[in-house]
Image (cartoon, rainbow, N blue to C red):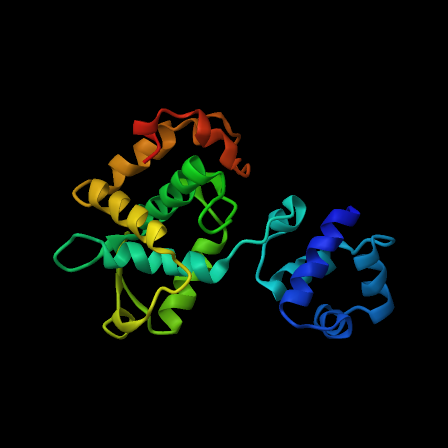
Length: 227
């Protein structure tokens, strides 16, 4: 782990108002060892890094790339798409919802050279998705903000009545407008159509299986093929 990566973790710890001793205790190592890690003079074992990233709610890839994703904003993006579902019952298939959020992050990068959430998307069989997507759905369901209909292989996501009153404070109006534009384009499309679309985009096509997809690749797409 380089000094830059250790600095990234240090900045995250300070941002969360945690002491070095608190973090060391949480991941089961001594304070002195943790201090040396932040100073870049010592490395953590892989198992210790896993506990560290779990504690901070980030991925190993985020630490490696020095990117601090905004997990709470990512959940608001999910809610934003559910509010703009366009369907009569407000339900969106789980896979389609994942692709919509992906399109928003990469389309925002196409225009602003920064993603909306900062999440790292991985190339898996069913399309680009961050590891945190599944955790985000669980969190949103456990906190009563979404409902999930599970009927065999079909999983439909929709916003709860209580969630409709929740403000999406992390999304600026321009980001909300982009979510609406993407929702409007895909509201009448089936899941397999949006899956095919994202699979044919350059970022997904040229990456290897299970590889993190660089946002920069989307800038090589034609504007009509961004979302």
